[in-house]
Length: 424
Ligand SMILES: Cc1ncc(COP(=O)(O)O)c(C=O)c1O
Image 1 (tube, rainbow, N blue to C red):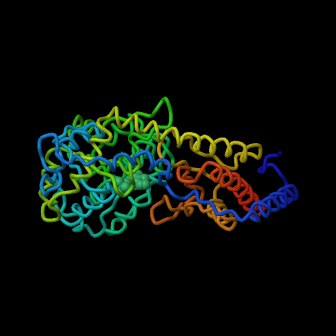
Image 2: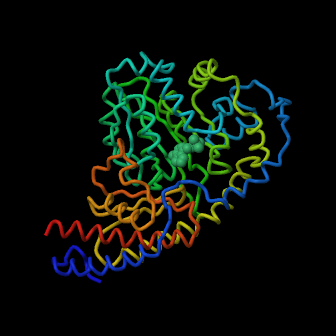
């Protein structure tokens, strides 16, 4: 097969006809497949069913978890998440069923009232701003958009956000923070390099109350014998003299049951005291029964790692299948696309030739394969290059994933040829 970029218009037209025929045949199969949902498959959820049999409610220090109290979380749950996040137990708040909910609360707190190190609430700025490494997690961006922040796009590199851009943007006092998914980022699956972490921790920011929203959502979701490792943001911030800058989050949503697990955050003692004081009017205590149940089930970091191995056995073949079918379906025709090859997490990105992502997603949808909308991983839903497609291989069964990826490759090829023909 020839390189699409060196073909003349006639050759491109012939290749397009051949692919359209193939596309029509695939579409005629009446596919109804979905590669858009970043959630565990049912057999992954089955791995945690035994947890529901745990009736024990008495905490290790005698606390009756059925009752009100201990807003900061059960002691054993604080210790567990201290291990997960790399903090001390007293630097941890164990919350309810959603880390996104905790992040939303803290953005709202900064916006409405500011933090302990704020000169003023963030809403006193005409237009407070937030840095959004992109592509990134759409719901992060949505939280800050909802409160009226201006979203500033920072290009995402394989080492994390482009730090030259970040360091330039934080010279503006209205820039109040940055969203980060530091390990196996959503959707590229990139992990932050040590240099990126250290620069984020050490950089001088015009805002004294600049916050790093460090969402370690995929902190234990490895898919390789050689998992990525990241530095500890709280420790690095402390070492750089900015210990109130880091707000770290995680949850067990993709460990046990999304929407019915336990979330936690870690930060400096000053931040934790301030946050607990401000949570007080909102809630008496989170679901401590669920906290105890999760710790009894997963036990400790070794228990958690063993449980995640079971997830890996289900997920790794799916990621491998997608990667090898992309290789097979998109090679031999020039550099029409590239894709990321994560060592963990829940997603990978396919980058099409510029201006072809939307059309690819549309072609897939019309043939019965749902993908996340092109642009969804960028602030305001707009990918300036119209190139990124988020692939979520976890939920569909393997055979569906294979069919969907084959169709995706045909659609990427068609969209590329259409674009090239437009120009000739
Ligand atoms: C990066 C990231 N953070 C947070 C969440 C949601 O976490 P939770 O269920 O704890 O609210 C997701 C879910 O997909 C995610 O991808």
